[in-house]
Length: 185
Length: 185
Image (cartoon, rainbow over the protein chains, first blue to last red):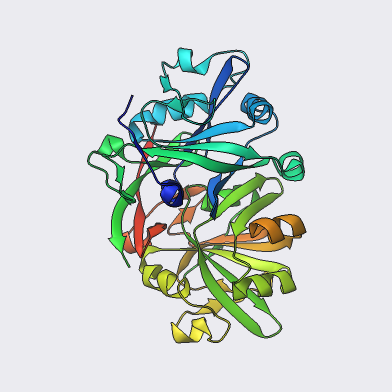
């Protein structure tokens, strides 16, 4: 497990603000799953919320709607192959954590696990919005706890001490971009 | 004006998939405006849709809700200072296009303008969803036309021939990341 440090809720949107790809983890009634989601964004500062698109065909969708909880995990470049793997297969008939040797740790406020090797984690409670879920596959979550690897995100600032620790952005077909150079306008 | 080439609608989500910051342009009844928005994501492939968070206090919100149209512009690094400027001031009492010398071109299917110097453009029709707009400041748009600078996005692929042509990702407080190196997992 990567080191992790609590991120104040009012700064938790910063983990998503630059648009990295995410892993969404979920758990319900003894089952758990993880999938890759590029279509995620902050939705509000206070209370902090996220919006996430998850297909109604996804097994994760069942677990999230049944448990009312999920975790948005921010993977590093070192996780890119796993991101692609868990994004290419359903967890309905296979335990992707076991198959791809992805470790987890318990979250603090939700039943869904924190995915090892990530650099940021947002524990979320589903905000039920039936119309959005049914018509747009769009789920809202209130962020109830947030964590980051302090080597990479500390005191509200990203730093990437190694190439493999950079966050990543999904394009399509197995292609990603790393997060590039920081600059001030 | 940058060169631009039509992007097939089914590939238009690729302009946003990696999470760049955007400029949202709008126009209604002889007024127009532009603002910076980091909280934007694709919402659907078919028909292609986007989700955008725009505060109810924003002048752009009035123009978009009155006209039912907006454009999601994807700026390059060369535009970063303009992104910050138009994101820091309301267009209610000032014409930001004039003040910051930002050129525009007419869009093809909506009244909102295409912002010069950007590398991608998504012309959108607002999908009215009163509850989301009022409770979450969340607007949905159907993408009705899309364009890209073919030097940067061509045949569904991003290439960044120069540092200043890279797309950018917003952090906070005037800080950005460029889009980094492409890699395959």
